[in-house]
Image 1: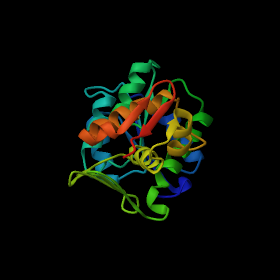
Image 2 (image 1 turned 90 degrees about the vertical axis):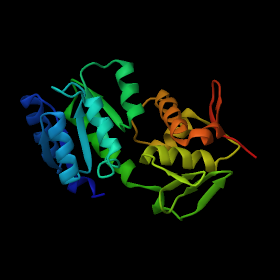
Image 3 (image 1 turned 30 degrees about the vertical axis):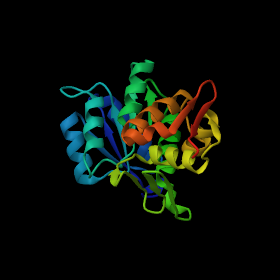
Image 4 (image 1 turned 180 degrees about the horizontal axis):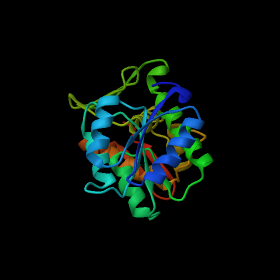
Length: 233
């Protein structure tokens, strides 16, 4: 991942004035900018240019932004690229769907240029600070194994693909095995101090993480009204 002021951002929106506004403010902040006006163009640009982040509008012609996100997360070449969703809807269900599909954050239109830049920088910082930067170790519990140095998760001998945020979440829970972590603590540890997401975001990511882990997902216990705990032996 490049440093923030060198990062390349792919902006996907079918409205020319929004594209112009986004490009102007991102370039002013020191980013490189690529543009796409529809889903197929966005997927091709992401595969070809491998941007450091994608700003993706939900409402696109022919192919909705959620479908574009789903396809980006299904391709090896683009799976690790963080995505921030742009939406004029502002409804919670749209945000939940985006998070469940792997979005890192969302911005509701209309937005201030300052908020946009802050969120972009926060996501770039969070996703560039991968666990392998710390001392590497392998944490194992029954059929579940997590290698922090290689950003690798294995369940019953099969590798499981997790997003950067999902990996951080699982790592924090496993390292605190047996202790209850509140949603606020999880947000602080897995998302960082400068995150803009709400505590309920944790619930969405835990649900998605459990689904990916299959039977091993049962090791993550919900402590109602408090948070989550990784099961002890």
